[in-house]
Amino acid sequence: MDNSKKIEHLTRLAEYRHKLRLQPELKYLFFELTMRCNERCLHCGSYCGDVESEELPVEVYYRILDQVKRDFKKLPMICITGGEPLLRKEFFDILNYAKKLGYGWGMTSNGTLITDEVAAKLKDAGMKTVSISIDGMEQSHDAFRRTPGGYKKAVAAVKNLLKYDFQAVQVTSVITKKTIGELDQLFALMEELDVDSWRVVNMEPIGRALQLKDYMLDKDDYRYLIEYIRSKRKEGYPVTYGCSHYLGLDYEREVRDWYFLCTAGIYTASIMANGDIGACLDIERRPETIMGNVLEDDFTSVWLRGFDIFRKPLSDLNEECSRCDSRYFCEGGAHHSWDYENNKPLVCFKNILF
Image 1 (tube, rainbow, N blue to C red):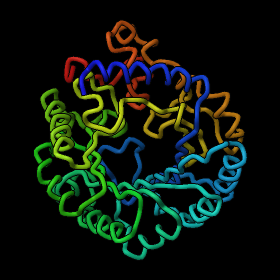
Image 2: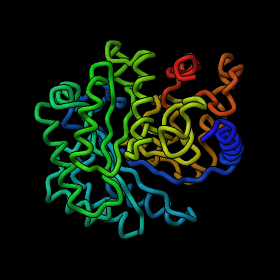
Image 3: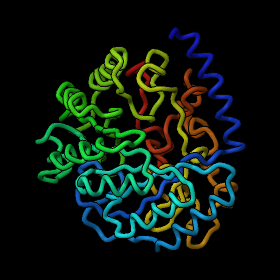
Image 4: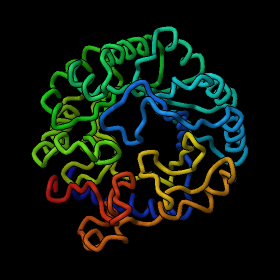
């Protein structure tokens, strides 16, 4: 697609984004069922692992599901995450209730608990989509997730899930300086498994990853990664870059199915393990990014009248962003990679990809 057509599309998207800020549409509602996890990933954005976790009573999830069904014209997709969500003992109680009300739902998991029996139960509970994390080949994956045997269990989980007719079984790979040389091996694995899609993302400078300077990609790595994804897509493979970041005209629409749009607070809301209401769960948890708590506040009212910080351009908060030629399409990038302390983007591909 030529750049003039991309500019036309991006301009229309920018106009649509402005309308969404005035009339947001709840399309994705995330439930962080627990902060507990049986892995201790080096890069975890939420600092999950073998930790004590606040967990909402099951009845609160029932109440929220009932309320959203009553208050919204169209049911959002319920996105289940954690921690490792399958550690929540009432997992199937919550999701079977969602199914009964007519919700579609999907899950992100490390896969270590998905036996064939669990995969069958997920199908019966109405799960539509699932993304399993495989972040490198066996040695790299297990070291990155500090979980011996995690790789083999994740691969087995994908195989178990593919036996059932889900809408999409996806693998997500977080690529670092240590694993960018394993892209070809990972691609061969995805071909062998025959996954529905392979989502490839760079490690973001958030959470624990802020301490992993040696793992961060450099400019050449970023260019190589994005070009790798584009080349595989041109060959017809279901490889995609994540939703994060404006990539410039040469790569927008080339490495994912559509253009960059941070949906935090305009399409996406989340309920955290302790009941806090936020936008994307990867966003830094600070007083200004927490909109309320479902134990005290009415979720619908918060969605309709809150989220102000997510419904205006980030680029307005930073002089360099406000002067950038790409500000109309980028607007400061994704909320999850914004430094709220200093009001600047933690990730910007200007002078790297464009």
